Every structure is written in C-alpha cells, then in structure tokens.
Image 1 (cartoon, rainbow, N blue to C red):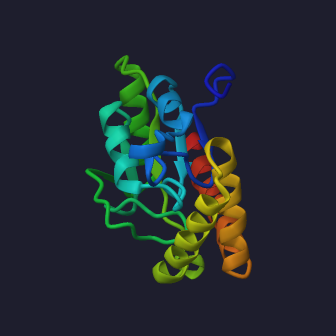
Image 2: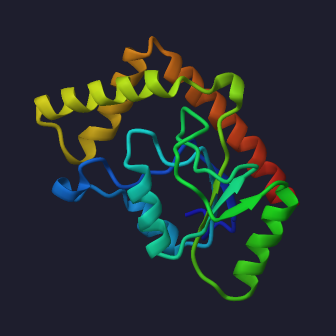
Length: 188
C-alpha cells in the first residue's frame, strides 16, 4: 500500500522475520518477502528480538534486501542496541541514506531497504534481562501449543508482562526514534 501511495520511507518498531525454531515450524514473516518486491525503505530497530536475527539477516541477504545500519555496523536487536550480527552497510546521516535509496531505485533495482536504527541508549534494555524474558515466553508458548499467527502477539505481550512493562516503554521510545529518522530521510 505504501508503494502504491508513493510513500517511499516509513517507520515501524521492528520488522518481522524468521522465527526461532523455523527449521521445524517454517514460520517466516511475510514482511521479508514483501521487502524483496516493494520499493519502500523501512526504518526500524532491526527485527523483533523474539526472532532469530542471524537467520532473518540471511533471508534478507538471499532476497537481495540491503540492510543499512544508521550510525552502527551491527544489527540492533530491537530492545537493545547489540545483536552480534554484523552489517556490511552503514550510513551516518539521513542525507547519506536518501542518496543510497535514490541511487538504488533510479538505477532500476527493485525491492525494499531496511534502515536499522538502534534504540536510543537511555531506553536500551539489558540484553540478559530481555533474553531471559523471551526464552521464558517462548517456553510458555510451546507448552500452550501456540503456532502461526498466535505466537508473535503472545510473545510480545508476555515479554511486556515479564519485564514489568519495561519492554513496552522501550518499544514506544524506539518507534518515536524511528519515526523521527524516517521523516529526516524522506525530507532529505
């Protein structure tokens, strides 16, 4: 819809991706396939932390979707600034990102671009705390037999409960941060 409305840059919290355990469940978000075919730049704090970030990056690479780190050479992990997944593309200004986007699309290269914008440091959560909450929520989801479209909303809600609402506060902060960057890129 964004592409049809001539919206070339938009913001979200985090993209969908390859779920943990996808080698058994084959649970891969339709976001990734859409990014491969739609000329839109998505500003996000990486893929949602409940996902398998290395596999998500591999999928994006396979589909030819560039991932540009904004001020970072590492894929942000949504609630935290660090995932350990290295990025091959980095840009340090909105103008630089806008130039890359124009060059891609004006040369006829189809498909989207992910702009990975780390959560501001003052809102970044402890990697240990968030990973423990995610692991607990995943275990509970498995015990309940949840699958498919039920999994992501359950995990996000349960992680918010397990972190005493801290993950929800972080989510709000990163969405605002992403919207600010998306506006600057669109204007550049």
